[in-house]
Image (cartoon, rainbow over all chains, first blue to last red; front, side):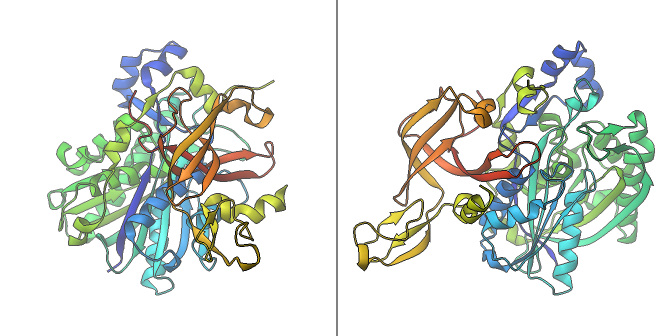
Length: 345
Length: 134
Protein backbone atom coordinates (compact mmCIF):
# COMPACT_ATOMS: atom_id res chain seq x y z
CA UNK A 1 0.00 0.00 0.00
CA UNK A 2 1.15 3.53 -0.77
CA UNK A 3 2.62 5.46 2.11
CA UNK A 4 5.54 7.36 3.53
CA UNK A 5 8.97 5.88 2.89
CA UNK A 6 10.91 8.64 4.63
CA UNK A 7 10.63 12.19 5.90
CA UNK A 8 12.86 15.16 6.61
CA UNK A 9 12.40 18.52 8.29
CA UNK A 10 14.05 21.92 8.45
CA UNK A 11 13.45 24.82 10.83
CA UNK A 12 15.56 28.00 10.50
CA UNK A 13 17.56 28.63 13.68
CA UNK A 14 16.50 32.19 14.50
CA UNK A 15 13.58 32.79 16.88
CA UNK A 16 11.73 35.92 17.91
CA UNK A 17 9.59 36.01 21.04
CA UNK A 18 6.05 37.39 21.16
CA UNK A 19 7.28 39.76 23.92
CA UNK A 20 9.77 41.33 21.51
CA UNK A 21 7.17 41.95 18.78
CA UNK A 22 4.67 43.26 21.35
CA UNK A 23 7.33 45.62 22.76
CA UNK A 24 7.67 47.34 19.38
CA UNK A 25 3.97 47.75 18.71
CA UNK A 26 2.96 48.71 22.24
CA UNK A 27 0.83 45.65 22.79
CA UNK A 28 0.31 43.41 25.79
CA UNK A 29 2.50 40.36 25.24
CA UNK A 30 0.65 38.21 27.79
CA UNK A 31 -2.70 38.98 26.17
CA UNK A 32 -1.27 38.14 22.73
CA UNK A 33 0.26 34.89 23.99
CA UNK A 34 -2.97 33.89 25.70
CA UNK A 35 -5.07 34.91 22.72
CA UNK A 36 -2.98 33.30 19.98
CA UNK A 37 -1.27 30.51 21.85
CA UNK A 38 2.03 31.38 20.10
CA UNK A 39 5.01 32.20 22.35
CA UNK A 40 7.78 32.53 19.77
CA UNK A 41 8.32 31.86 16.07
CA UNK A 42 11.08 30.83 13.69
CA UNK A 43 12.71 33.42 11.41
CA UNK A 44 14.69 32.59 8.25
CA UNK A 45 18.24 33.89 7.86
CA UNK A 46 18.92 36.56 5.23
CA UNK A 47 20.10 33.90 2.75
CA UNK A 48 17.26 31.44 3.35
CA UNK A 49 14.03 31.19 1.40
CA UNK A 50 11.49 28.54 0.44
CA UNK A 51 13.92 26.96 -2.04
CA UNK A 52 16.75 26.58 0.50
CA UNK A 53 14.39 25.26 3.18
CA UNK A 54 12.90 22.80 0.67
CA UNK A 55 16.34 21.54 -0.32
CA UNK A 56 17.46 21.10 3.30
CA UNK A 57 14.41 19.07 4.39
CA UNK A 58 14.37 17.08 1.12
CA UNK A 59 18.06 16.16 1.51
CA UNK A 60 17.33 14.82 5.00
CA UNK A 61 14.39 12.78 3.67
CA UNK A 62 16.44 11.30 0.82
CA UNK A 63 19.38 10.50 3.12
CA UNK A 64 17.14 8.75 5.64
CA UNK A 65 15.30 6.81 2.90
CA UNK A 66 18.48 5.25 1.56
CA UNK A 67 16.87 4.90 -1.88
CA UNK A 68 18.64 5.61 -5.17
CA UNK A 69 18.11 9.29 -5.95
CA UNK A 70 17.22 8.50 -9.53
CA UNK A 71 14.22 6.42 -8.45
CA UNK A 72 12.44 9.67 -7.49
CA UNK A 73 10.11 10.34 -10.42
CA UNK A 74 8.28 13.43 -9.19
CA UNK A 75 9.05 16.52 -7.11
CA UNK A 76 6.27 18.77 -5.81
CA UNK A 77 6.94 21.87 -3.73
CA UNK A 78 3.91 23.36 -2.00
CA UNK A 79 4.31 26.94 -0.76
CA UNK A 80 2.74 30.37 -0.74
CA UNK A 81 6.18 32.01 -0.73
CA UNK A 82 7.90 30.55 -3.79
CA UNK A 83 10.97 32.75 -4.48
CA UNK A 84 9.93 33.28 -8.10
CA UNK A 85 6.46 34.17 -9.39
CA UNK A 86 7.45 32.37 -12.59
CA UNK A 87 10.13 29.66 -12.33
CA UNK A 88 9.40 26.56 -10.31
CA UNK A 89 11.08 25.98 -6.95
CA UNK A 90 10.85 22.25 -7.73
CA UNK A 91 13.46 22.65 -10.48
CA UNK A 92 15.95 24.04 -7.97
CA UNK A 93 15.17 21.25 -5.50
CA UNK A 94 15.56 18.52 -8.14
CA UNK A 95 18.93 19.89 -9.23
CA UNK A 96 20.18 20.27 -5.65
CA UNK A 97 19.18 16.69 -4.85
CA UNK A 98 21.20 15.53 -7.83
CA UNK A 99 18.43 13.33 -9.21
CA UNK A 100 18.60 12.70 -12.92
CA UNK A 101 16.66 15.08 -15.12
CA UNK A 102 13.82 12.68 -15.98
CA UNK A 103 11.42 13.65 -13.23
CA UNK A 104 8.03 15.32 -13.19
CA UNK A 105 7.98 18.56 -11.22
CA UNK A 106 5.53 21.28 -10.30
CA UNK A 107 5.05 23.99 -7.73
CA UNK A 108 1.79 23.98 -5.85
CA UNK A 109 0.05 26.84 -4.07
CA UNK A 110 -2.93 26.53 -1.75
CA UNK A 111 -2.10 28.77 1.22
CA UNK A 112 -1.16 26.44 4.08
CA UNK A 113 -2.21 23.13 2.54
CA UNK A 114 -0.05 23.02 -0.61
CA UNK A 115 2.29 20.48 1.02
CA UNK A 116 -0.44 17.91 1.69
CA UNK A 117 -1.71 18.49 -1.86
CA UNK A 118 1.75 17.40 -3.03
CA UNK A 119 1.50 14.21 -0.95
CA UNK A 120 -1.84 13.40 -2.62
CA UNK A 121 -0.36 14.00 -6.09
CA UNK A 122 2.54 11.68 -5.30
CA UNK A 123 0.14 9.04 -3.95
CA UNK A 124 -1.84 9.12 -7.20
CA UNK A 125 1.29 8.84 -9.35
CA UNK A 126 2.69 5.96 -7.28
CA UNK A 127 -0.62 4.07 -7.21
CA UNK A 128 -1.09 4.46 -10.96
CA UNK A 129 2.39 3.12 -11.60
CA UNK A 130 3.65 6.32 -13.24
CA UNK A 131 6.51 6.66 -10.75
CA UNK A 132 8.23 4.53 -8.12
CA UNK A 133 8.82 7.27 -5.57
CA UNK A 134 7.60 10.85 -5.35
CA UNK A 135 8.91 13.73 -3.24
CA UNK A 136 6.35 16.07 -1.68
CA UNK A 137 7.50 19.17 0.18
CA UNK A 138 5.60 21.78 2.15
CA UNK A 139 7.76 24.83 2.94
CA UNK A 140 7.27 28.53 3.53
CA UNK A 141 8.86 31.76 4.67
CA UNK A 142 5.57 33.46 5.35
CA UNK A 143 5.21 37.18 6.05
CA UNK A 144 2.82 39.25 8.09
CA UNK A 145 2.55 43.01 7.63
CA UNK A 146 4.32 44.98 10.38
CA UNK A 147 1.90 45.51 13.25
CA UNK A 148 -0.62 42.94 11.91
CA UNK A 149 -1.57 40.13 14.33
CA UNK A 150 -0.15 37.75 11.71
CA UNK A 151 3.32 39.02 12.58
CA UNK A 152 3.22 37.02 15.82
CA UNK A 153 2.67 33.74 14.00
CA UNK A 154 3.83 33.87 10.32
CA UNK A 155 7.10 31.93 10.34
CA UNK A 156 9.37 29.66 8.32
CA UNK A 157 10.07 25.94 8.03
CA UNK A 158 9.42 22.91 5.91
CA UNK A 159 8.94 19.17 5.75
CA UNK A 160 9.59 16.69 2.95
CA UNK A 161 8.16 13.23 2.35
CA UNK A 162 9.21 10.41 0.06
CA UNK A 163 6.02 8.67 -1.04
CA UNK A 164 6.14 5.11 -2.39
CA UNK A 165 4.63 1.68 -1.99
CA UNK A 166 7.56 -0.40 -0.77
CA UNK A 167 9.49 -0.08 2.46
CA UNK A 168 6.94 2.35 3.88
CA UNK A 169 7.32 3.51 7.49
CA UNK A 170 3.65 4.55 7.51
CA UNK A 171 0.81 3.54 5.19
CA UNK A 172 -1.70 6.12 4.02
CA UNK A 173 -4.97 4.22 4.44
CA UNK A 174 -7.21 6.94 3.08
CA UNK A 175 -7.23 10.61 2.09
CA UNK A 176 -10.12 13.00 1.57
CA UNK A 177 -10.24 16.66 0.53
CA UNK A 178 -12.95 19.22 1.22
CA UNK A 179 -12.84 22.43 -0.84
CA UNK A 180 -15.04 25.55 -1.07
CA UNK A 181 -14.71 29.13 -2.33
CA UNK A 182 -14.21 30.91 0.99
CA UNK A 183 -12.19 34.15 0.92
CA UNK A 184 -10.79 34.10 4.45
CA UNK A 185 -7.15 34.96 3.61
CA UNK A 186 -5.54 36.02 0.35
CA UNK A 187 -2.70 37.90 -1.28
CA UNK A 188 -3.22 39.72 -4.56
CA UNK A 189 -0.53 39.58 -7.26
CA UNK A 190 2.32 42.01 -6.51
CA UNK A 191 1.33 42.63 -2.91
CA UNK A 192 4.08 42.01 -0.34
CA UNK A 193 1.79 40.99 2.53
CA UNK A 194 -1.39 38.93 2.71
CA UNK A 195 -4.78 40.24 3.79
CA UNK A 196 -7.27 38.34 5.89
CA UNK A 197 -10.83 38.46 7.12
CA UNK A 198 -9.94 38.65 10.84
CA UNK A 199 -12.49 36.63 12.80
CA UNK A 200 -13.95 35.35 9.51
CA UNK A 201 -10.91 33.05 9.26
CA UNK A 202 -12.36 31.00 12.13
CA UNK A 203 -15.84 29.48 11.87
CA UNK A 204 -16.58 29.56 8.10
CA UNK A 205 -12.99 28.83 7.13
CA UNK A 206 -10.72 26.84 9.48
CA UNK A 207 -13.29 25.12 11.67
CA UNK A 208 -15.76 24.24 8.90
CA UNK A 209 -13.14 22.77 6.56
CA UNK A 210 -10.99 20.95 9.11
CA UNK A 211 -13.93 19.46 11.02
CA UNK A 212 -15.73 18.41 7.83
CA UNK A 213 -12.71 16.74 6.20
CA UNK A 214 -11.60 15.07 9.44
CA UNK A 215 -15.14 14.07 10.43
CA UNK A 216 -16.03 12.63 7.02
CA UNK A 217 -12.85 10.59 6.60
CA UNK A 218 -13.35 9.00 10.03
CA UNK A 219 -17.02 8.32 9.23
CA UNK A 220 -16.35 6.61 5.91
CA UNK A 221 -13.68 4.43 7.55
CA UNK A 222 -15.89 3.60 10.55
CA UNK A 223 -13.34 5.10 12.92
CA UNK A 224 -13.76 7.39 15.89
CA UNK A 225 -11.25 9.59 17.77
CA UNK A 226 -10.38 6.86 20.28
CA UNK A 227 -9.13 4.70 17.39
CA UNK A 228 -6.22 7.11 16.88
CA UNK A 229 -3.00 7.41 18.87
CA UNK A 230 -2.36 10.92 17.55
CA UNK A 231 -4.13 13.68 15.66
CA UNK A 232 -2.49 16.63 13.92
CA UNK A 233 -4.45 19.61 12.63
CA UNK A 234 -3.18 22.67 10.79
CA UNK A 235 -1.81 25.21 13.26
CA UNK A 236 -2.45 28.84 12.23
CA UNK A 237 -2.11 29.59 15.95
CA UNK A 238 -2.05 27.61 19.17
CA UNK A 239 -5.78 27.89 19.82
CA UNK A 240 -7.55 26.70 16.64
CA UNK A 241 -6.09 23.15 16.54
CA UNK A 242 -6.87 22.63 20.23
CA UNK A 243 -10.46 23.78 19.73
CA UNK A 244 -11.10 21.75 16.57
CA UNK A 245 -9.63 18.67 18.26
CA UNK A 246 -12.08 19.12 21.15
CA UNK A 247 -14.98 19.67 18.68
CA UNK A 248 -14.16 16.36 17.00
CA UNK A 249 -13.74 14.48 20.28
CA UNK A 250 -9.95 14.19 20.54
CA UNK A 251 -8.12 14.59 23.84
CA UNK A 252 -5.26 16.97 24.62
CA UNK A 253 -2.93 13.98 24.93
CA UNK A 254 -3.60 12.95 21.32
CA UNK A 255 -2.59 16.35 19.89
CA UNK A 256 0.16 17.49 22.28
CA UNK A 257 3.13 15.90 20.47
CA UNK A 258 2.26 17.56 17.16
CA UNK A 259 1.48 20.98 18.61
CA UNK A 260 4.68 22.69 17.46
CA UNK A 261 3.09 26.07 16.70
CA UNK A 262 3.61 27.53 20.19
CA UNK A 263 7.40 27.59 19.72
CA UNK A 264 7.93 28.04 15.98
CA UNK A 265 4.72 29.78 14.87
CA UNK A 266 2.71 28.95 11.75
CA UNK A 267 5.07 27.62 9.10
CA UNK A 268 2.17 27.66 6.60
CA UNK A 269 2.67 24.83 4.07
CA UNK A 270 5.03 23.22 6.57
CA UNK A 271 2.73 23.66 9.58
CA UNK A 272 0.61 20.51 9.89
CA UNK A 273 3.43 18.53 8.24
CA UNK A 274 6.04 19.54 10.85
CA UNK A 275 3.53 18.58 13.55
CA UNK A 276 3.00 15.26 11.78
CA UNK A 277 6.79 14.70 11.57
CA UNK A 278 7.07 15.40 15.32
CA UNK A 279 4.56 12.57 15.79
CA UNK A 280 6.45 10.25 13.40
CA UNK A 281 9.59 10.95 15.47
CA UNK A 282 8.14 8.98 18.38
CA UNK A 283 5.49 6.82 16.68
CA UNK A 284 5.49 3.05 17.15
CA UNK A 285 4.33 0.31 14.78
CA UNK A 286 0.56 -0.11 14.36
CA UNK A 287 -0.23 3.32 15.78
CA UNK A 288 -2.86 5.25 13.81
CA UNK A 289 -2.56 8.99 13.08
CA UNK A 290 -5.12 11.48 11.77
CA UNK A 291 -3.57 14.35 9.81
CA UNK A 292 -5.71 17.24 8.58
CA UNK A 293 -4.27 20.29 6.84
CA UNK A 294 -6.06 23.53 6.08
CA UNK A 295 -5.41 26.03 3.33
CA UNK A 296 -7.18 29.36 3.21
CA UNK A 297 -9.33 29.99 0.21
CA UNK A 298 -10.29 27.32 1.39
CA UNK A 299 -9.79 23.58 1.74
CA UNK A 300 -8.66 20.73 3.95
CA UNK A 301 -6.87 17.47 3.15
CA UNK A 302 -7.41 14.69 5.68
CA UNK A 303 -5.30 11.52 5.93
CA UNK A 304 -5.56 8.31 7.92
CA UNK A 305 -2.06 6.97 8.45
CA UNK A 306 -0.95 3.72 10.04
CA UNK A 307 2.63 3.28 11.20
CA UNK A 308 4.47 0.12 10.11
CA UNK A 309 7.31 -1.79 11.78
CA UNK A 310 9.77 -0.16 9.33
CA UNK A 311 9.54 3.03 11.41
CA UNK A 312 11.94 1.45 13.88
CA UNK A 313 14.70 0.96 11.32
CA UNK A 314 14.75 4.51 9.89
CA UNK A 315 16.96 7.30 11.29
CA UNK A 316 14.67 9.75 13.11
CA UNK A 317 17.26 11.99 14.80
CA UNK A 318 17.53 14.88 15.13
CA UNK A 319 13.81 15.07 15.74
CA UNK A 320 11.50 18.03 15.24
CA UNK A 321 11.37 18.99 18.93
CA UNK A 322 15.17 18.89 19.12
CA UNK A 323 15.34 21.25 16.14
CA UNK A 324 12.75 23.50 17.77
CA UNK A 325 14.84 23.74 20.93
CA UNK A 326 18.02 24.58 18.99
CA UNK A 327 17.25 28.21 18.28
CA UNK A 328 18.92 31.60 18.64
CA UNK A 329 16.81 34.56 19.82
CA UNK A 330 16.94 37.83 17.90
CA UNK A 331 15.51 41.29 18.50
CA UNK A 332 12.93 43.09 16.34
CA UNK A 333 15.52 45.29 14.63
CA UNK A 334 17.49 42.32 13.34
CA UNK A 335 14.23 40.57 12.46
CA UNK A 336 13.11 43.60 10.44
CA UNK A 337 16.40 43.49 8.49
CA UNK A 338 16.23 39.75 7.87
CA UNK A 339 12.63 39.96 6.64
CA UNK A 340 13.39 43.02 4.49
CA UNK A 341 10.88 45.14 6.32
CA UNK A 342 13.19 48.15 6.18
CA UNK A 343 13.02 50.37 3.11
CA UNK A 344 16.60 50.84 1.89
CA UNK A 345 17.78 54.18 0.56
CA UNK B 1 26.74 36.22 -15.80
CA UNK B 2 23.60 34.11 -16.24
CA UNK B 3 25.04 31.38 -18.51
CA UNK B 4 28.29 31.38 -16.54
CA UNK B 5 26.42 30.64 -13.31
CA UNK B 6 24.12 28.13 -15.01
CA UNK B 7 27.09 26.11 -16.25
CA UNK B 8 28.39 25.75 -12.68
CA UNK B 9 25.08 24.99 -10.95
CA UNK B 10 25.90 21.30 -10.69
CA UNK B 11 29.10 22.06 -8.77
CA UNK B 12 27.72 24.91 -6.65
CA UNK B 13 24.54 23.17 -5.47
CA UNK B 14 26.53 20.09 -4.45
CA UNK B 15 30.18 19.55 -3.62
CA UNK B 16 30.99 17.69 -6.80
CA UNK B 17 34.63 17.90 -7.74
CA UNK B 18 36.98 15.87 -9.88
CA UNK B 19 39.49 13.17 -9.10
CA UNK B 20 42.60 12.12 -10.94
CA UNK B 21 42.30 8.34 -10.89
CA UNK B 22 45.98 8.11 -11.83
CA UNK B 23 47.23 9.62 -8.55
CA UNK B 24 44.05 9.81 -6.46
CA UNK B 25 44.16 13.58 -5.90
CA UNK B 26 40.79 15.31 -5.65
CA UNK B 27 39.99 18.86 -6.80
CA UNK B 28 37.40 21.48 -5.94
CA UNK B 29 36.52 23.51 -7.93
CA UNK B 30 36.73 20.71 -10.49
CA UNK B 31 39.83 20.59 -12.70
CA UNK B 32 39.99 19.12 -16.17
CA UNK B 33 43.69 18.26 -15.83
CA UNK B 34 45.76 16.98 -12.90
CA UNK B 35 48.68 19.41 -12.38
CA UNK B 36 50.86 16.54 -11.11
CA UNK B 37 50.09 13.84 -13.67
CA UNK B 38 49.54 16.24 -16.60
CA UNK B 39 49.18 14.16 -19.79
CA UNK B 40 48.86 10.97 -17.72
CA UNK B 41 45.92 12.43 -15.75
CA UNK B 42 42.64 10.55 -15.82
CA UNK B 43 39.89 12.85 -14.58
CA UNK B 44 36.44 11.80 -13.40
CA UNK B 45 33.74 13.51 -11.30
CA UNK B 46 33.50 12.65 -7.62
CA UNK B 47 31.12 13.56 -4.77
CA UNK B 48 33.22 15.13 -2.02
CA UNK B 49 30.86 14.66 0.93
CA UNK B 50 29.42 17.39 3.12
CA UNK B 51 31.63 17.64 6.19
CA UNK B 52 34.93 19.36 6.83
CA UNK B 53 37.06 21.47 9.17
CA UNK B 54 37.80 25.22 9.14
CA UNK B 55 41.53 25.68 8.54
CA UNK B 56 41.45 29.47 8.23
CA UNK B 57 38.92 32.28 8.05
CA UNK B 58 38.40 36.02 7.77
CA UNK B 59 35.51 38.25 8.79
CA UNK B 60 34.22 40.64 6.13
CA UNK B 61 33.22 43.97 7.69
CA UNK B 62 33.23 46.11 4.55
CA UNK B 63 31.07 44.21 2.11
CA UNK B 64 30.28 45.11 -1.46
CA UNK B 65 26.76 46.33 -2.29
CA UNK B 66 25.03 42.96 -2.92
CA UNK B 67 26.31 41.57 0.38
CA UNK B 68 26.03 44.56 2.69
CA UNK B 69 22.94 43.20 4.47
CA UNK B 70 24.96 40.14 5.46
CA UNK B 71 27.91 41.95 7.05
CA UNK B 72 29.79 41.11 9.12
CA UNK B 73 30.07 37.64 7.60
CA UNK B 74 32.65 34.88 7.68
CA UNK B 75 34.56 33.51 4.70
CA UNK B 76 36.78 30.55 5.38
CA UNK B 77 38.88 27.76 4.02
CA UNK B 78 37.20 24.44 4.73
CA UNK B 79 39.22 21.26 4.39
CA UNK B 80 36.72 18.59 3.43
CA UNK B 81 37.02 15.15 5.03
CA UNK B 82 37.52 13.87 1.49
CA UNK B 83 40.64 16.00 1.00
CA UNK B 84 40.12 19.16 -1.06
CA UNK B 85 40.00 22.64 0.48
CA UNK B 86 36.99 24.82 -0.38
CA UNK B 87 36.68 28.59 -0.04
CA UNK B 88 33.22 29.33 1.24
CA UNK B 89 31.04 31.52 3.39
CA UNK B 90 30.54 30.05 6.86
CA UNK B 91 27.10 30.80 8.23
CA UNK B 92 27.63 31.56 11.91
CA UNK B 93 28.16 34.36 14.40
CA UNK B 94 31.61 35.87 13.56
CA UNK B 95 32.40 35.74 17.27
CA UNK B 96 32.00 31.96 17.33
CA UNK B 97 34.10 30.90 14.34
CA UNK B 98 37.44 29.27 15.10
CA UNK B 99 40.12 27.27 13.35
CA UNK B 100 39.48 23.57 13.78
CA UNK B 101 35.68 24.07 13.94
CA UNK B 102 33.76 21.18 12.36
CA UNK B 103 31.31 22.29 9.66
CA UNK B 104 28.83 20.79 7.23
CA UNK B 105 27.57 21.94 3.84
CA UNK B 106 24.21 23.73 3.67
CA UNK B 107 22.15 25.06 0.76
CA UNK B 108 21.78 28.84 0.85
CA UNK B 109 21.25 31.89 -1.33
CA UNK B 110 24.43 33.47 -2.68
CA UNK B 111 22.70 36.61 -3.92
CA UNK B 112 20.35 37.94 -6.54
CA UNK B 113 20.41 40.22 -9.55
CA UNK B 114 18.25 42.93 -8.00
CA UNK B 115 14.52 42.54 -7.37
CA UNK B 116 13.72 41.42 -10.92
CA UNK B 117 16.81 39.30 -11.65
CA UNK B 118 17.62 35.67 -11.02
CA UNK B 119 18.47 34.29 -7.60
CA UNK B 120 21.81 32.54 -7.17
CA UNK B 121 21.94 29.51 -4.87
CA UNK B 122 24.80 27.35 -3.75
CA UNK B 123 26.76 25.68 -0.98
CA UNK B 124 27.87 27.37 2.23
CA UNK B 125 28.93 25.79 5.52
CA UNK B 126 27.52 25.92 9.03
CA UNK B 127 28.92 24.65 12.34
CA UNK B 128 27.98 21.03 13.01
CA UNK B 129 26.45 22.15 16.31
CA UNK B 130 24.62 25.09 14.65
CA UNK B 131 21.73 26.65 16.45
CA UNK B 132 22.30 25.56 20.00
CA UNK B 133 20.32 27.89 22.24
CA UNK B 134 22.48 30.78 23.37
